[in-house]
Image 1 (cartoon, protein in one colour):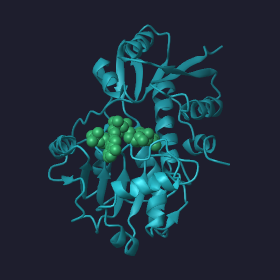
Image 2 (cartoon, protein in one colour):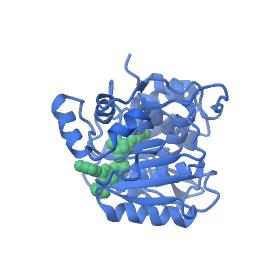
Image 3 (cartoon, helix red, strand yellow):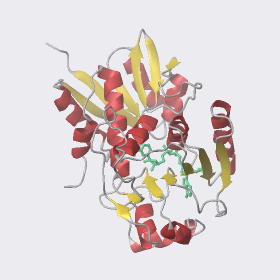
Length: 319
Ligand SMILES: NC(=O)c1ccc[n+]([C@@H]2O[C@H](COP(=O)([O-])OP(=O)(O)OC[C@H]3O[C@@H](n4cnc5c(N)ncnc54)[C@H](OP(=O)(O)O)[C@@H]3O)[C@@H](O)[C@H]2O)c1
């Protein structure tokens, strides 16, 4: 009989994570016995104690989230290079760990999640101009994928300019002259972007109440909302909410249309359909779709089994 798989998530304040539901669905879909545990770690040494359990074979694979993604990368023996990054190695804070040949291997499946969710929504990135809000762990993972998928240019705007500059330097080393650091608060140059990817903590864990939206409208009032209402770019928000995220709700209030379309096929089968119109405006439930795809990829790294990310997604979408 197959030994039950022991999987889990390391992070802080993760009690409301959707990952246990996603991986419970994956275990059922793959017909594998196992469990997915939450390791709520107060500090780095508690997280390292869980890494040690993985090294000893007491666990089969773990996801890592805030604030231990950088620590996971530092603690690993190897970085799993993704096939799309042929141009060069672009390491990112890790969200997935597993053992292979006695080595602790780190990877990030966030970029895969983004790409799969975009392809599933019939978004073709080739030649597109992208505004990336944020330069943290998730932004680093997705920036590389956007360029690997053929985006023409990625403008990185971050509250702390040094972090945007550092990310842009690293991106341009692998994809020369593709990334630009954009000043936070500067609207010039943004009216014509095709895609906005939101990867900051603005609105994280908050429902879009009038107070939250009023605050966000002040923080993001510098964005060219009028131009975007006239020519809507696609808005892919990494955050997720039961209905609209605060940024999605603000964008809707500023005149951007909502496109509730989700991926219709898993990434392995997802292809841009030539007869289909590309979506414009706010991609509702994009954060959940990305989360399901990144989880499916992690599950595949741990078990070797591909599971249908869209069926995993069904386990977390509001009914
Ligand atoms: N859907 C998915 O599958 C998925 C996957 C990964 C992450 N996410 C979500 O993506 C978001 C970012 O995650 P992360 O791991 O990248 O976090 P992180 O590494 O902590 O980075 C946080 C980012 O948010 C910015 N930020 C924080 N507070 C801000 C504020 N008040 N105003 C403007 N910018 C602010 C930070 O800018 P500074 O550099 O100035 O601090 C930084 O760029 C989270 O909400 C997370 O849940 C979703």
